[in-house]
Image 1 (cartoon, rainbow, N blue to C red):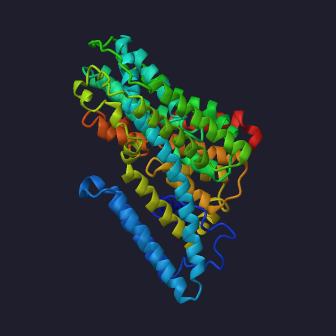
Image 2 (image 1 turned 60 degrees about the vertical axis):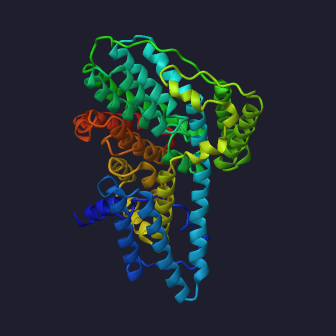
Length: 475
């Protein structure tokens, strides 16, 4: 019982952030075991306080990045001061720099991806997709499957949060007179988005981190497609029978994409191809290919400015005021970079640096010894996946990566699957869920999502079983 309590506390408290490779052999010489020292206890206390403040963002109205960045600074100051007193400051500095490098690679990848998404949104691409679906006059049941299928496949290449917000916007547009459909669609979108983001390293933070650490090759992620599809279909098939059958009454709109929209989509696709090929054949980090894609987007923005000829584009019909800012002479790609979700990006900085510090202190090694040494590895990965209902999956994945467990490919794939699928169990278990709670406030709620948790849990275990069946060769 004591060991089980230790695992639960370990997952919910110290392993609440993202770990980098600070504790890997050779990076930080002469690292000390401080798990029973005052420095270690102080690091744990700072971590808990930082995360409690971040998780209470809505209550205390303090952006979640602020306590995390401050917590990261305090933890590393404490560690570096102690190492300096011991006459070995270089060990702590090298560990800090290793964590910082891991964060920079993540930052550059997400920065380019979000910049492309902002550029496509500004060109009217997402509005065009929404209007096209609205105008087709599908029934609620047809829309339920179309929205879910789009979310599943789009989340394999686009940020899960962006996909969820886009599909949530569509669900609100077509179901504005039927809150029952909107609530069901939100649960469906979250399940589909988390499942779809689990079979591609481009689809989520946890899969991206595993890819960046060279644990799995790009093609190995694709072997999770069938288990992820099962995870998406099982709850969807059950929810289907509760979706209204009528056809929504919707006024028709006109799609009006801005100049260069299709070319930006092409450039984004080209960027992803460059990223994958440069990683597979040149072994460059994914950030290298993404930055090449950002250069292409910058050059294309220069082309838009130089060929604007002072013409203002027509606004999307349901946003007439947009014509005030649609002049391409004012197009600035750096504005798209500035409009990124910096609060989230800085939150990841704090999380990565804090857990990198806890790994350097020695706590993650102690947890790894129990999870991957004293209990069955499959059970450990399933439990970690279930805990992602409370904790961000990227957070947990990097905590595991910093434990450096020795596992076959099949177990790494299992962990990737369970972390993605487990995030759908609760509304707060993933970024798509948190995003929809804010976007569809008052209609889609935490309590409503909780009603469907048994159905989603059924899909969770069904996908695990299918993974052991179709990917048996990896164990």
